[in-house]
Length: 488
Image 1 (cartoon, rainbow, N blue to C red):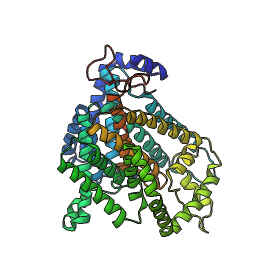
Image 2 (cartoon, rainbow, N blue to C red; image 1 turned 135 degrees about the vertical axis):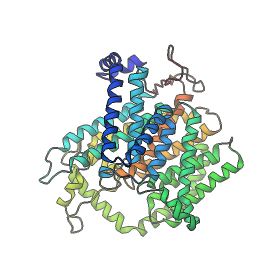
Image 3 (cartoon, rainbow, N blue to C red; image 1 turned 45 degrees about the horizontal axis):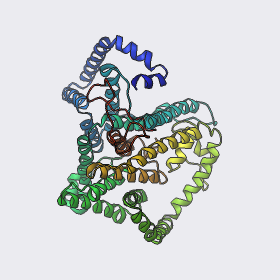
Image 4 (cartoon, rainbow, N blue to C red; image 1 turned 60 degrees about the vertical axis):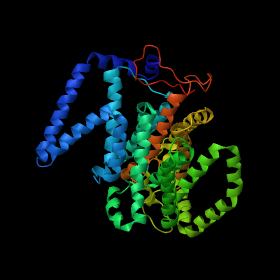
């Protein structure tokens, strides 16, 4: 499989042979560069950087030896550490970039084989990255008689796409046991639930609120905290009654805060409720039918109240989308490049004002930045995820954590797609949610990668095989290496 996969990617086989022949020199070069970088940092801030340097070395070793623990530290660090570098570069982005880089280095230098699980989903994600790179080049052209976004903003917009896809690919391939997936899942739930303390115990809130910085509690934080806790509470029969009640308490507390306390912010509670409904509908067709029949009237009322209470926002969004259509028409195939359309909006008057604005829609952003081709690449990725989800839903995954996680991840995926209609929550737009939003937007990509990881542990290598069979290691593959899942 490794050789056949390498043959599909132009240039991989020659690059792998060259790396294999020069691996020792490359390792020495990496060590030298690390030492030089450390010396440079020490020279700039000698009073602070020695400690930071030692912490950094320890973290790199942890990330390499226990990558899933590194992912949990990245989630927590992204939420808690207020560091903001150029244009909003943050710990979550740095941590995921490090994990992805170490993963690729391990394959190319240590394992000397480039093997991926579920190649179709990764291929679709790589297609989105490729289209984004081409759109970046197209964005350098003068489509309007006004300056484009600064190159740093354009690169930042592209980096959000690449890091998002990279997060998914990393999780799909690096999570190799349910034990580590449990650590990641429950670690996020436990830390994420600390944000609720301040709403119910204000005297403690002054301390717990400091654990969550700007961008950490975006829409995807609320959504995935709810769906992961709800799925485990309802479907993980191996959990004791006390843990399940505690998880339900997290769900109820989150929904209360999002729906009652922050009701005006629709992105906080609408996706979460959609996720819960999707999870319940997955459990039984009878439950699905009951929810559809019983939920028609309440859903209609909620939609009417939401629109009525925020008429100005919805009306201006429609006007903004009409202007966006005129901007997209200039280059509908590959778009105007990452972040660029924001600089073109003042050329069109909205309610008598010529101002910069963003679309407040994930899907309008996709088309505006990466064109119809980019939107199709994203749709391809969604379809491939749905194929994996469909097979996992049909397979008799054992009761317990795995089954609950599958329901949670599918429900969370549906909720995340719905959230895209409310804002740029899946792939943040540089001039709206921004780089800081990656602290929360990384969650759906990470936990959907966990779904593919479960597929690699439970689904057969060939879809024509009996779905109740389990994957077996490839002949000649070393123990502990990645299991290859064709995925159709």
